[in-house]
Image (cartoon, rainbow, N blue to C red):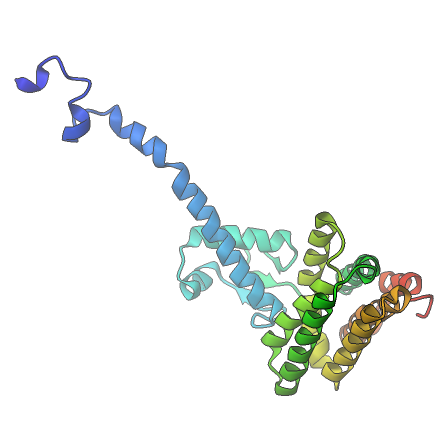
Amino acid sequence: MSSRKGETPEEPRPTGNGNDAPPVPAKSAGTAPEPTAGGRRLALDVHGRLREMILSGELPPGSTLLQAQMARKLGVSRTPMREAFRLLQEEGLIDAQPDQRAKVRAVDPQDLDGVYGARIMLEALAVSVTAKSIAPGDLETMGEALKRMQDMAADERSDEWHAAHKEFHRIATQAVGPHLQRMLTSLGEHSERYIRLARLGVHNSWARANAEHEALLEALRLSDQDEAVRVIAHHLARTALNVLADIAPEYEPVATRTALGIAGNGQS
């Protein structure tokens, strides 16, 4: 009887009685966005992990990907795995047709050629701008990254080499604005699987790459824009052309060679 005394609007909140339906939906509605945001974050995390497995070669081209199997392996449900697969397909890293198993996409010569053609032009521009203003401290950091690359190459520690490699190229191109930085980052990440293929397919590739990095660092020390641009253009083109010669020797890399002709002083 006391529950009906004039305080009915306030009493259901502290008692938590199941008779008061309106407050319950209100609480659920207030918390609904959190699982959605959390689910999106989890899907992005799963996507990042799968992406790294593909780029590193842990999941090589042609590998079959089963959502249920990968969900168990990564300890997640099928829902974030479906979203991760969708994102990988949008990036062109997997092929996933309805009612068919997804597969890691094979290396596409045209894609490789386009990525490196764009990367040569944009990275040459960024290196040229950076050469005008790079600070002694940045040069020292690049030298340290290069030393780590040389040490890792000697021990064939691929993952550590790639981390130092990213840092080296980031500093060499740091003077351009954020929009171009994002484009360079995207192209660099997209080309990582090709760099790994080049390391596998060419004898003594570690030493060659390190020598080219040394040449780039020296050009930046001397503020020699023309030499820095020439070195970076040839360095990037060599990776693309070596991989193409190995996987698709019949393919004519028009974009890579054209970009090299423009940025590399016509020495293609």
